[in-house]
Amino acid sequence: MPTKRGKGRRPVLIIPGFMSSGLEVVKSPTKSWEGKRIWLNLTQVGFQSLNARGALRKNEEARSVRDLSTDPSSEQMHQEYLRQIECKSKWVRHMRLRSNLIQEREGVEVRPIQGTSGVDYLSPGALTESLSYVFGPVLNILKENGYVDGVTLDAAPYDWRLPPSQLEKRDSYFTNTMQLIEKLYRSSDGSPVVLLCHSMGCKTAHYLLNFVVQLLGDEEGRKWIDKNIYAYVPVGAPHLGAGKSFRSLLTGDKMGLEAFLSDDEGLALNRSIGSVPWLFPQTCVEALSREIMPQSKPDQMQIPTVTLKEESTLRVSLPAQTLHLHSLHNNAEGIKKVRLSIEVGDGVFLRMGYIDVGDEAKAVLHEESWLLACPPSLDAAIQRYPSIRFHLDEPGAGLGDDKKRNHLCHLDICLPFRLICCLMKWILCCPCSMVWKMGRGVAKVSKRAADAGAKALGAYTVIAQSGKVDWKRGIIEQRPDNVDIEHGNLYEINARLHSTDNQRVGLFSAKKPGQLVTIKIKWEPSVSFENRHRSGIVEHKRDPSSCYNTCSSEHVMKLEGLTNHLGLLNQAYLSDPIKPLSSS
View (cartoon, rainbow, N blue to C red):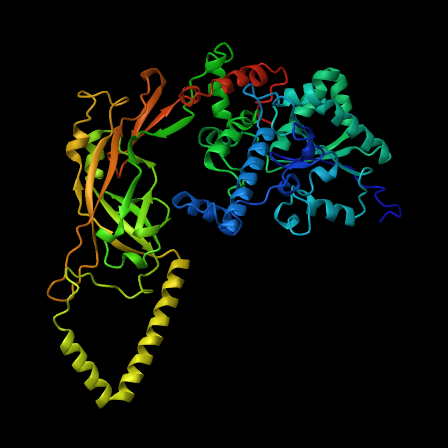
């Protein structure tokens, strides 16, 4: 072992991967954010999770069904909720790039945190380091074995949102990284540097090596590499691309921030990152290069790069309406929360969230809609989902409260006989009656405890349901040869909910009239693929109604409206002389 710390060791330069460089705000319209870490220490910019114990969200749900503005605690939580929503909106605006995918929004400058502090932990702190480590444990091990930060150990973080050509144009990243490598070479007594790279950092390092050759010329560039670079060590390298990159562009990816971002926000954020095409799979890149720049490889056969399941869509819409539980259930006063579930076909449920039952046992259903995937043809869709049925659910196992019976008349003709029997029971067997009462009390407490446990586990009880409604007639009326499906009206379905508790007491007991529920449905055909984009249709062996269509990447991107990404591919990737999309 050398006596001087770090002496005799190969210096190490870490190049992190996608989302692995810490980012901080340099300039912002919100001055208090300047100098704060925005990726990923959210608490520095004042954000507390909207999902923390669910209190804020539950309070907003309660306010949506009844007026709580006079409740001081509810109003305080509501103001905190609004503040958190505003904070999240600002965060998304700071992280998203402009529509050209290479420039930041006006008045915003976000830059990578330099040095090893930008790659150790995304959210530094005693409680968060273990959940957000990147190279932190690796750095600790290297330092324990004699490496010195800034002498034999360093990192080259970068703004992972940008294409590589923009990294050099805006931040001079590759020029500065060359200077950093030369500094490590000198400070370690002329020992060449090990490039330790991970994920997209492997492609960044590969681009760096090609950048050196292009900047200094082929001969001088190779001399520089031989002198200053000892080894290129890729870890988890997407040499041929990553399939998830193309999928995330189409469907979104919340990047581990499920408690923070909604699905729509995750999709918008992914579609504003200019580095996503850098990770496209190689076959996707080759097909796109032929479609965007046909002169590049005209002699090669087109490779189908995207396989899509061909499906039609059943759009189910629930209009806003009010359920009067008194006309539906005998124990309406004891019901605190309900939700409406729509059973499509057999066993496919579309469920709304639980809502609080307001005054006078009224439940206000808010407007909601669902999209249900169906086989591509209308006849196959009807065959798979031939009927619809409504269920009204209550959380728990239905054990907590004793059920009440409703009577048409309040007069109980058996009341005199009940009084005589009760009096005789207490006179003849008082001890037995007391034991019976105590047993009933214990059973009641046990039922309530069991019901609370069932609620915590997500169990529910169906307290009302309708019969099955055959909707084929309404769907068939919307055949493409009869109406304009794209602009046609929704077909309305009505069904009456009836209580599942059908027991009656007494001679004059009454049956509840039930509650009418309305939904609207519409069948929409599958997306039309032009013949020139089809590479073949493959049918599923076990399910003849399912078929898969292989088509070009360009066509799928056009269907999704990603024309700005196609322009970026041509401008920042395919036209780049360093060829960042080549196999690394």
